[in-house]
Image (cartoon, rainbow, N blue to C red; front, side):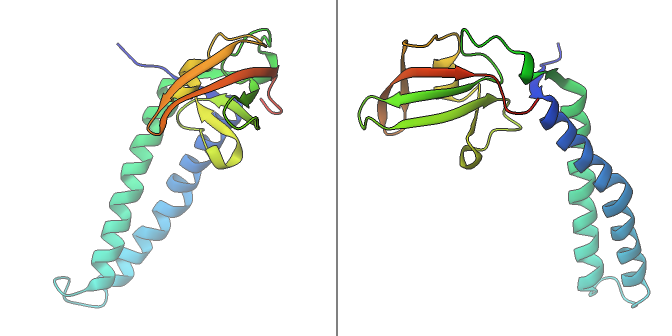
Length: 161
């Protein structure tokens, strides 16, 4: 059974662009680096050669990883989600019940989550706790620092798809 990875259109496109860069640019650059390093002679003590081979291994590994993720992606149009409840792609404004501060997160897949840019994974403890909630509902989640309580203040569609 294939485990699908939820992903926004933008996230899917970003992974495709990274794959294209690796396959059509970076891969060729590293092959030329290996050829150049081979021309310098003894490969046993050739640091340039070993560094290029290591880089090639990283590139090939990332290419395999990206192909797998793209093949399992379940692309969701975040611009057309229902905002009555918290679902994948929605932007949620929460009120922290301990600090009375509002925080805003967009729920995305694990490949796209970036707390610094305001997105969290639907598979994170807070993401799982928010799913299905409506405006006014309480969200209780266990974190490494203890239990946290929030209230859903607003739910909006994504700013991008």
